[in-house]
Image (cartoon, rainbow, N blue to C red):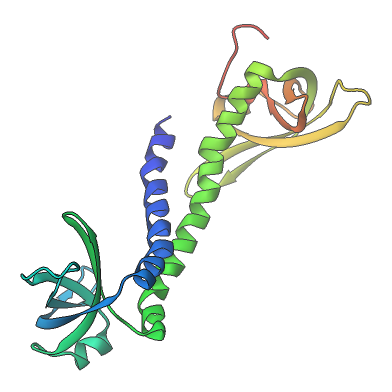
Length: 231
């Protein structure tokens, strides 16, 4: 459970960024540009030495409000070198009540160059998280369901091995035959704990639980996280 809770905020971050990179172009396409005035340009150096370029500006909020609003935008180095205090810029501003989103109006090419790094990161991060979520959420949920509805049959451990890296993983391979008519030969592998791994040897007979409706879903009961009162 601790691992699942640890992964949850990382998953939500990935989903949030994905929603942003998909939703922002749509929002900008539907938002008319409005004039703004650059009030200040500044730079900020990050912990790894990377330089961030910032532009402060005033603009007229949507709805024709008499009072100008103030905001700040991260810009590229090229934009920083081109802009100057007092210069006019076009921005796109959308908002609901107190919440608003403002961004510098850029050409399509400039927008792509400004966002391509974020797009790559979003694809990379969510690609990794898909595998992680599958491993720590989907697979355990499936195993838990199999403990409740799975059909038990005898299986045999066919191999066992240890994968070492930043962490050590213990896995077993197994084979079994379904009790369906006609029976089907199935094989699988699963990650288990060190204690469960040490308790098994190649050739040992184990209890395999499989879903009668989806025989490809199965689990070695002795290696599973969930236990039943009776089986």
